[in-house]
Image (cartoon, rainbow, N blue to C red; front, side):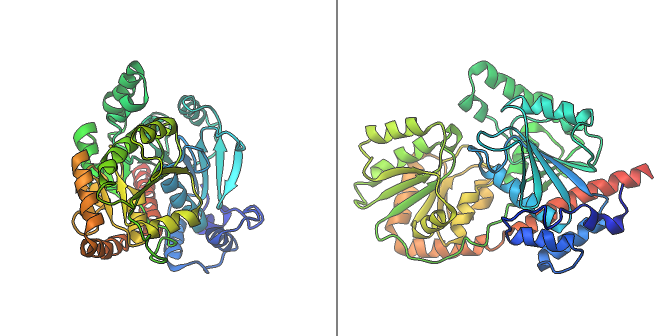
Length: 426
């Protein structure tokens, strides 16, 4: 293992390797590679932790990466964390499934991406390759347990942590045929938990931790809560829409339950004639949702624009009167806190994750039923004073979350695991 005093420089990509598409964090990584200390304060602290740790090369195992057409909050979370790790001095490689239209090997924001195997074969192939050493040297590993586990405790004999955002539960039955759904539930609830009992788990919210303990029976002392951050570009500005505007953001998949949101919004049109509902995102439920919108004769005020660029999303967050989510499962609800950073309150389902992302009654309202969603949306749209109060509360709530803090805490957990193993070996 490299000497600690040289680790931060020897593990870094050179400025040339970082490529020509240089972002602020690319520049930070290049700065670190030159051996200087001209990093932002938060990254300087993280870089010091990297230097003092027993870690140099870290592998990250993920089902999908940020460029995947179906990428969502889990992929964004991983990207924001590991790009900061790379900028602070780690050599990070993310191993994931192949993505249509993207190369097998890529370099993004200072970390490597290796895309091999299919949607489901990526799990056994990654485990086998890692077990026999085909993936190259590593002295730390992060597994992202996104429904299907990689079972890293069985084959990765190095410091490890697991990102587990939430229990999938009924999601298996939402997306898979009955027999495959039962297999998924068996893996999540019976096969995997005994394997991961001694593994350090990182989850996004206290409510998700409570579910992991209650449903998977993993020991609470091994689980750390590290909330996701909010990109600094999400901030107040612009002007609100003149007409009532409800915004929802997420993949068009069953777990997001956009059909329930549409059904909840339809009765509001009579009370708010200028109402618009915009659902941002793409996914295989598009045709089903479009059919529902036509059946409800709502095509003139409910729209599905698909994916939008960062500037348009920011504009919509700022224009919306309220951001809404009917999701059945979330580790957090990053779109809700992104909107909150723009001063836009939320109305969301009362589920684990949302319980932490939304300060109920202060930054938004949590509801238990579809009828409750309709009533809460109507209340927020009708009461300007309430909207103003919730908007102020949303800004206060969002100010607590930064990606720098998330990246630092998650790395400290991995570094502590490395130190514990090193002490045990001695």
